[in-house]
Length: 332
Length: 260
Image (cartoon, rainbow over all chains, first blue to last red; front, side):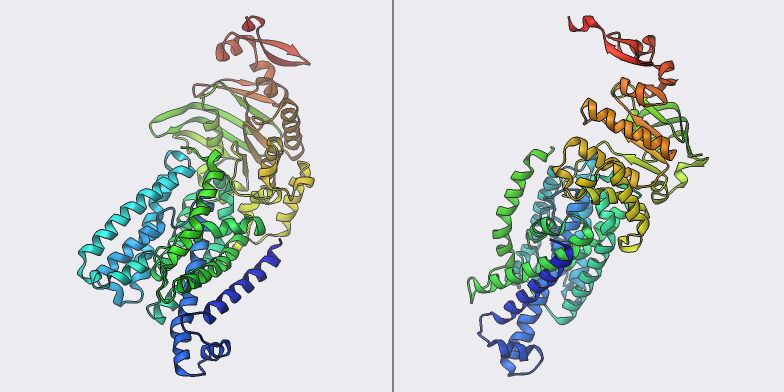
């Protein structure tokens, strides 16, 4: 399929997903009332539900899903590893650790505190994974996964320690836990706007970096002979990934597999060039998480599942299938 | 006239010295073959010439200007490298792979100019890849893939071409065809070229000069007839090989008693 065809289709899919997510919920509201509520008309109850609950949630899910999918495509391109994504590499776990620390220190009263802390955590984790992955001069599929496993369990242990030890968090343990398991929780409009600015700016940066990520297709050394300053480009890519993951984790906690599945689903249609893959990933990642979040809201309604459970149920088997297909390429 | 000249180069990794006092001179229109036993430092020498490994001693200069003073983008416009590894996990098409050769010339946000498109088209035509241009690279045979990566390097429009074992994945007929093509392009465009080759006979037929690298030192350098002589071949590669003359070129063959 041509990119010129794929992009409008993906845009329509996103708009439709968002409309469905706005229409469906625990309280039944007629479509026309939803429409008037978005524009601030209609009665106050449905207005409050749509404008204050559903709309921020849909926008938040779209931003988080888009950010994770773009970050996944960039990590896969940089590490030349089809199994890399923010979750598998432990980048999300690193972001969540720093976010929980910020939370425990009481920094969550500032809207920027969580995204900034999560960005720092994602950056540290991404640097560690990249360093481990390129030890011995060669990035292998397996070392990236092992590094991710180690990082995730190590940060998980510290997070648990903080959860239990911190008085501040114990009081809100349930809320913090559901966020950690992957749940879109929009604290206020300022935070949502901040995350939106970060995600959109980082996605534009990712598109600008796209031709340089392409040049990594045959490895770092060939990237260098093609004219890429490997260190500077790697640093830029990791920084953009950290911005995306930090923003996503601040809003949605640790949500698995969106960043893994979406780029794979798109490459057969839009090709492997990142200038096309990145915008397509943003759109499909956003739709995917909007729908997954809708599923999380309605499967056990009125109770709510963490959206990470939904993406895990779908993404886990997909990951195994990919791993089996990659078996012959894996180098220990 | 383009010239890439390495003088008295010493190089290595960490605490390991791989090359000692190597001199190599590449000049326009000629192919220099680097041959030698496994582990002699052939690939390292090529990486030094490509500016990927900085020499610890000695100098490498392109038209008199030290290689270390070029940034990667500027260097990629002058020196192209055909990599040995051409495995990729992502399904790029042949045209997309060839277009990677233009990376150093792209504008902001990867804007492609008319020159870029023309260079890609020409490289595709040069390597007879027209019918494969829209195919995914992971669906090609080893020889076709080799040609695609060679086209990528040609699309760089560089005046120095460095090849790391460009024929290692090819059968004898394709080895000859590919190196013959490389040789023709080198002559037509006045490229200064250097190839690491395993096959001494290919080196004898294709290269204007041969440098023999043993344990990090160039032990002999000259025309194929000057270099590939019985005494040198047996001292470097062992006494199971014999040098004969064939079609006016030296040819290296196993001795009959090896079979016994």
